Image (cartoon, rainbow, N blue to C red; front, side, top):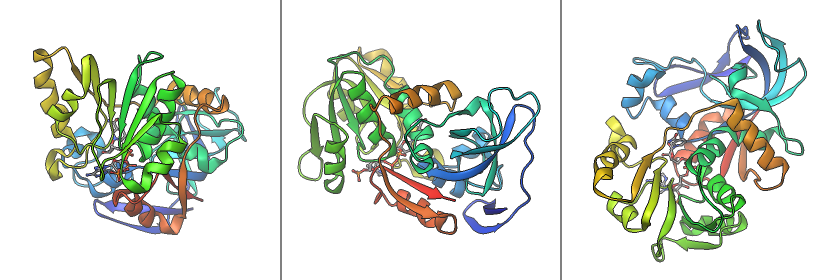
Length: 314
Ligand SMILES: NC(=O)c1ccc[n+]([C@@H]2O[C@H](COP(=O)([O-])OP(=O)(O)OC[C@H]3O[C@@H](n4cnc5c(N)ncnc54)[C@H](OP(=O)(O)O)[C@@H]3O)[C@@H](O)[C@H]2O)c1
């Protein structure tokens, strides 16, 4: 099969690999589309270095193929699989979705939502799942602020917060304002013109550019500040620096920082499927790339030019 092959951190090429064999609790997928997110860039480069201590491979990547988000068709079952049958259309995450075939654990797969393409479905799992987990507990009528609202996680954050009945404010740069409005945000701040104002019951911080004190000032007295990620912390700890610092501040205030470490699980993807089938969430796919252009797709996301989601189609 054709695949993007990555033997060491920092370089990858299009090559040929054997089709993988599904093991216990796994299925083989014919990959139709693979979503791209900031995490793919981190696993391609091995940065921040802290990642290497978290089980993704110390000297080189554990998976020889990059890409985690996946949508495709089940073509073979490993032992013990009863959840899916050959021919089922699914979406979720796996190790190595930038390939014609990939093996995925059923614990990280759900049935593809009705009425969306494989391309749209592949744009959902990590970004949508992260937004969903970050917004847990939001009540109707609460005020939610989403920074980085025009990015992958943020584009789902705006839509899911609206679906939960919140009043949603998005923050983004000029070229993403129209997208964020179209996703249903009640208010949009273009931070290149003026930074956001007001106080919020929950802040979903996907943009990462603001200090902890700035975020805390914008939270209501018992507000929560969910730290999703940041690309500002340097090559050793990266976005983790902010999360680590925030924990030390929590005992001194009723406003709480919540560093988020999202999990990739079938039940989360199933929740997203329900929201998509109900019409409450629509994947905002800006652009697709072919498998041979996968590295350009990653660079496009890393450069912050992407609006919403980017997908590699196979
Ligand atoms: N905690 C978790 O479990 C988890 C899960 C997924 C992702 N993440 C992390 O969450 C962050 C957002 O992920 P994403 O997939 O939504 O990324 P994305 O698609 O690149 O969106 C991030 C948005 O943040 C804004 N931004 C502001 N300052 C930035 C900077 N210095 N570098 C990059 N973007 C900046 C950009 O919008 P403007 O151009 O409008 O400023 C961009 O659209 C990333 O750091 C990612 O690694 C964490």
